[in-house]
Image: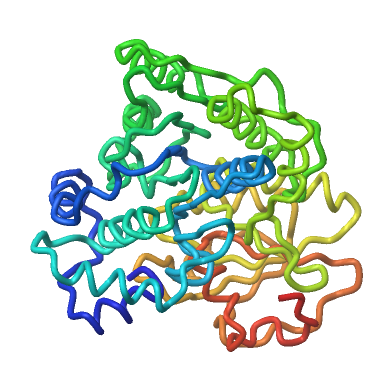
Length: 397
């Protein structure tokens, strides 16, 4: 269940389920019942294994610095369902969501939870009418419920093995899904993709007469988001902004927008020396490891971790063991969560323990930084003030 969505589903007695059912038939039928709100406005579509949320936020920052209003549809939630639908950085209000869900109750097409949320997002953006709306694909791209739009530009941030049970077990398979967001005659901005993935993307783009744009170097401007990988995400955002703004693009405004853009759970310090980072697969964990080395070269690192069972957790552990020999594993509330004992048994560190997320961590050692990672779902639950795990630390929330 998407956190917070159950309230509206129960209140309005909407028939839905939490399964992942790739395909566009149901969402297209539902949107037609709703008057096709997804055909109103100017869209950007973003797919990729990692970097979607950061790139979307950086692009929104650039556009807003140019005086534009910007809608964002994020996946998954940071705290709950409301922050997945935003206008100029502000989440949809419960009152607005309530009106939309009452409207969705009347449609006849049965939808999955993510399809329901996608439909709600399109209704919200049709009402708000932002200058540009940035839509983040939930999973894959080609058969993701967001892939009903005709964007002015598509962005593929990265491609790596993830969600292999749905997207296929090779880089080429996954690239085929991601490349499905490219539209005829519309430009596509791509990140530093593996060569087999790049070949698939270029072949798809050529068949659609779509220009492919690859940034030549990372952005050197000041960024609130930390890590070398964020400079590459910023470069994608700049190239996409140029396609949207054309002659109105202003480099100084772009740099100001990038400097101001921030997103929760991307190497975010929420308590003194406690960092939340939503890395959850081998590619994003590698970026996290590099950022830890760059930011805290002389600090001891304590890893607090929970992860979903469909992730390559053994490889992820090996990566994180390269920067830490102190681990705390957490059981968290998600039907797909890997039991903490599995991580504990596989971990080779000198110091390791299992704690319930409602326990309290001991006082942090001097010269130690705690990195909480492994799942955005875990971080979402830990951000709730009722969770006492970090009660010993002064909150920056």
